[in-house]
Image (tube, rainbow, N blue to C red):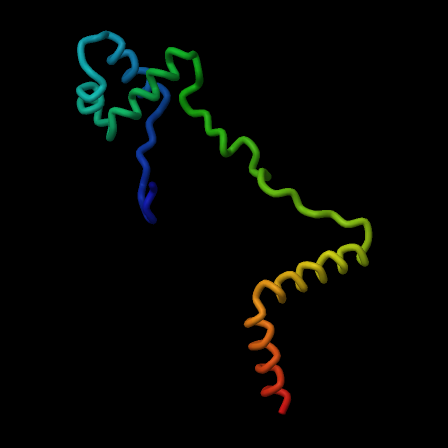
Length: 113
């Protein structure tokens, strides 16, 4: 997992091709080729070789394909419908967390006096 402040090594497509071709010559293992070229982990070279053999692009980031991906927002036909929806949510939260309702009401009473 990535750590806060961690800087990732980025490789050009030309460098990746050189690394893959070096491995495909068959003279050295993944680990040796990775060490010779300064690649941090031999697993990265394995991924590049697999993509090369499958005819895929090296740098395809699936997560960036749709920046709006996620839960769809609820749309309402009228303001009243939205109000009712929000009231139901508030009632649910009051039932789920009754301690919060008691604390909020006691605080408001003390500030009024």
